[in-house]
Image (cartoon, rainbow, N blue to C red; front, side, top):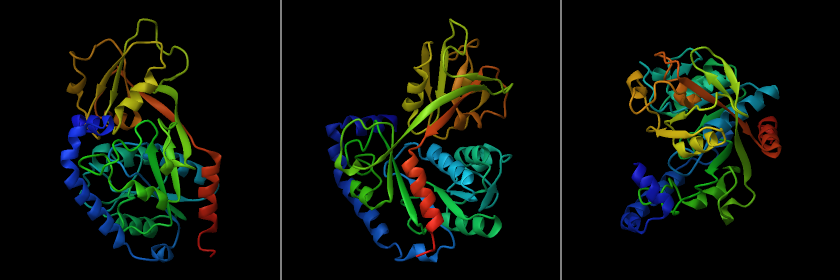
Length: 336
């Protein structure tokens, strides 16, 4: 899969061999969209905001969702969150996820969202079931959907598409010849486009997009809970950082760690990887050097003890204009 991702974003010419399959994927995506029921938003008892993307892999949807949920809470709203619960394994769906739900049951992203926001979170592969369960069993006045832009059976009142500012749309082709789940034209239909980082090039489809940024705050020791400010030199001189990431775009995380005054060795793992203690054995890991990972990876390492493990806490800087747009949508929902 890594080989294919590199080919998508380096625009390798051999991918044109897969172009006929891409046309089929694009056609099927269009048919699914065309079958979407008209007037879905009028069926909703509260606003449903979908935060997704049109490319395969990570773009920063979950950090943005957490930031928006926190903002809405600060505004006095009661947000709830739904998710497909990828890699979750409950005995039955839908499942109400709490801060105590193990990551191997809830899935890494729902587990992280529940901890960071303290909001009610419901997972179900059928997002409509998750939505109904959330509304029936929790006091919420707005629902945020983690991903689901292409899950058209889910009614929604507001759509946000998150785009990786560095990678953008790759070669612009649909799967499997490129990274797109749908045609780039889908961008024109959403209510807000959010770039994660400054765009690597100018594109007409991104005109008027909001720009968010990820900012490291502190390093947290998983065993003791000790926190060290990210700025400056949190570790002693001579330290060598062992960076671990099992996310959709690990390169973005590794780039953040380059700001530290230590050499960084990157250890990418597959997205949503379920870690074991043996994964960090020596070699290739150094038994005497810290291992720094994402918070999403960290919650999957709580079942075993390793004094080397640290997580990086990230703050998301979201434009005030976007926050106000979302707040206004929630306030005004149902008035018209």
